[in-house]
Length: 124
Image (cartoon, rainbow, N blue to C red; front, side, top):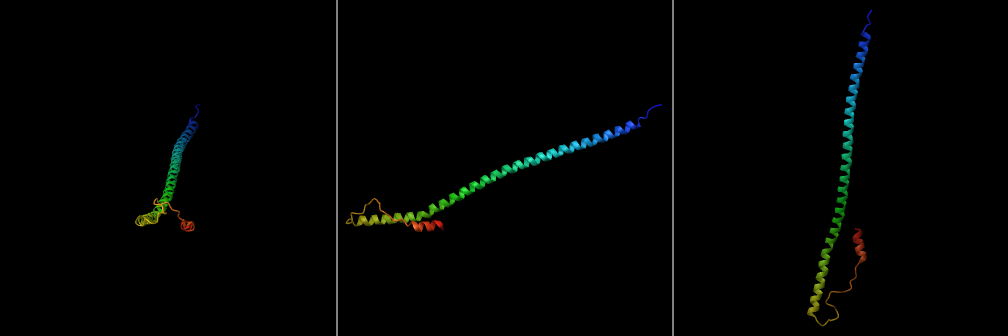
């Protein structure tokens, strides 16, 4: 009597099904790997973007501080011109009245600087 091949066909069908499941799982694994690599690349790009933005923020803070310093310097110019005008006026008066020879023409004078007022202005 001849042996039946039916049991071997069933096992063959089971192995084909497991191979199909294995191929599906492998393709799904590859898709997940690609997805993970894409997310990792996005994370690296985001970290680099964050560093650049933080660098820009630091640069903006430096520029803001520099703007304040420039504003303080520009605020002093009218006082500078006022002092220069006073000096020139006193020099013209000295040239027109030669009897007072004790005041030097070089503009060297002792000046009292109101530190209290400057500190109050700086705190404002």
